[in-house]
Length: 601
Image 1 (cartoon, rainbow, N blue to C red):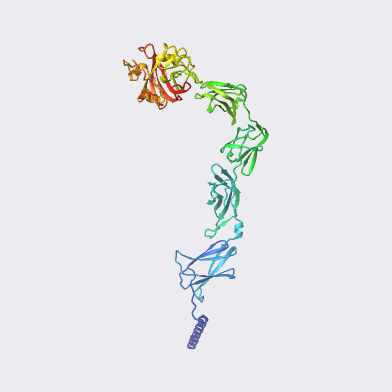
Image 2: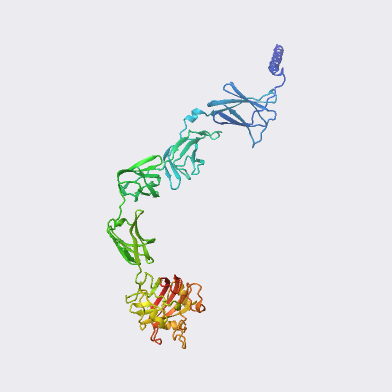
């Protein structure tokens, strides 16, 4: 019985095993009946980078059998086929996918072989795509204020401090002073921006740039905001309320350099100077007296500074009885009214020195080098008024110690007599020879008219004349002059450099300028009686030029009493010829111009 039961159990086990194997083979058969299935590898790695209505897929692939990829999205309603190839680590493949709707998108990717016969299993990725909705919610940066410097052509922008999530910068466009458009990018963390070389009264545009994700392939920009660059409004706390035609008014304050024009009612002012803190303008000459509005223009705007600005007419000074003559180097007084507006007093082309000025009088020094008959002129507010048409300038009485540019006039010349001695006596320092054969000689003579310049030909003294035409008959008190020409040495250089030196008579002898000799020559000068400094007409070489006087020549001279040759020299000096009008020996109306340095004993 037990054996039978064992038999039955074994048969059952065999039957069950056989049935189980049969079912397992049936399961595989349905996959093997069409042959073996070959699968293509998926991407080794893949990243999907978001963008504006687009994405960029980066992949790495090592399976050489993979030749294509089919990408599905939108529940497989949209797809894209793209060729792929094996990549390296450093050079992944890229697949652009464009024209996508904004929002979250899930992509399904299948790789295929060359004939699309075998494919990979699915690879899925989900990414956010950005578009108009995202851009519409981006905030642009806000300008707190800005300041344009006209002097420096510089624009300073102050930004409102705020947090702009995912903002990567601010793009700014503006015009340079050359008219060229410039484009710059600044950081969103920057609260103050300084732009250089900005054209005034131009425009600036700016927008804020965003990158919603670090891997985003696009940068999103807000709409540009346009800002008109205006010079800041000038601030003038205390504007002027009055002024005079052709005179200046001054505006002080801040941002003054923004002002382009200033108007006195209908009259445009003339801007003379302009800085950041002050402006000086002249009321134009065509302005008329009255009450007007004072305003300034800056850019396209205007600012009224004073509703009632009083314009006064030009003040014309008057001098009812001006002087008709004046001495060179001396003062004259002009008496009248409104003389405080005078800015210059001129004697011909020479400007006098205003020493004292009040509304009722002017004290003016006549220029030292003025001479002859000239117009006496006053200048005020750019106006010129001739007070005297034939103002006579007389020559000053000066000390004989040292003087420059001295004119020695002939006896027939109307201009004569302008030296004085140290004692104050007037003199006439000029004599021309009456006898043409005698030439022209110079002598210092203290005759009845004072110290005079006369001839050194003492034996013909009675035929020599002073400037007033009277003969020098008093030979007793004449001082004879003898000359020695200086061509080099310290004395000559001192005179040529306008640094005359003080020299005693004894010092002159020791220096060799005075020779103490005897015989036919003079006992002190050592010069022959006739060999003295004289001037001959051009081309005249009498005496072989030994005693001729050339322009620029400097002579040392000594003077003493003519009747006492053995007496000490009365004075010494230097004389230099500058100019001479004399054209003949008989010319008694000409002049000689010299520089003289004279030192009495």
